[in-house]
Length: 317
Image: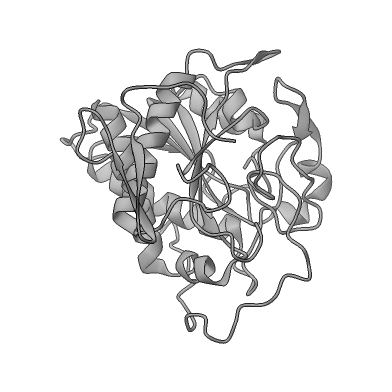
């Protein structure tokens, strides 16, 4: 569903061929939980969102056609490891000096080895959901969890170079998870100034583009997003605008009505957050054209840069 409410600082989308630009009042250029699934164990999302996967939707049909022979040849799938982007101290000076950014790499490559643990139900305020899910993958087997951790490492490096302290919810060093509730708690306890959860979708072939998921207004059980709905909407708009600008990717053609933004109330990682937070679905792993981008290391570097630029714009006001 498209975002609700309005803000004079939230950019308007202007179509420009395959890409789009966002304009923001006062700024020249603004840009899951399981948000995907390709694994049969992934349950369907209980949400009005039209995205088949958008953070926990039904897994893509096993009969989805393979990538056509005209698809881009053998893109680089080598993930960036922790050794490639060490968790160094933030730059002494920079535009984000004194800021704390929480980066949440979606899923975990070992989740499929711990079905009982990740299927355990946890309270997300509006109901109960799985602790975590396996995530989706491309037709060639490149896992969303591998993608999300790689982009997280690249994003951390950029943010640290700008002076931010970066907190990862996990660094590929856990046997599974963490659960969506713990992912939110890690950000809350870190008193982050902003948080982003990195994902890639698992929708139908022909569904292309990225979208940013914003928290809905929720006040139920442990969940109370009243203080973060507005700031999160601004954060999401800044990330979306910069993601378009840096990567050249267009907003989703199947969710968000062309805005690149979607609002949801069924994601524990958002419902339980007390700091401004969004999810970004960087593209659709099940579409051959999007998959060629997601599996390309150079494009992933651009994705990290676009997300970092959006966070920087948000934190600098």
